[in-house]
Length: 119
View 1 (cartoon, rainbow, N blue to C red):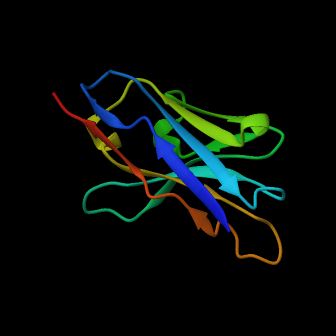
View 2: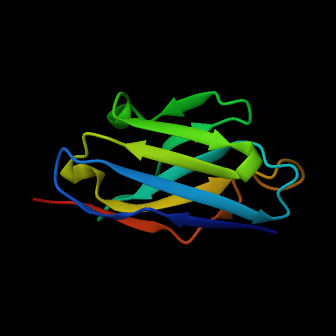
């Protein structure tokens, strides 16, 4: 079992910034990729950013150039620096982790942290 705990959400005006954190605990010895997903009101959950153990990152098109995902393997943590926030970034942000075989891909999830972008 892997436990993931997100923090750093909140309310911010358009154009503002937030930094989300996710710390993993438990059986974390074989963690592979970790990712941030979000679920906006009325929409399906979508992946926002994903990062490998060696720091290679990919982003959903709408956040490219505004969000930066990073990882600290020593702290078993990932972060999401969100700049230039827009109202459409509003949603619950979830941290996910992949434990590798034999477990299903990205089968560990946190409880989520709310991000609200509003004037």
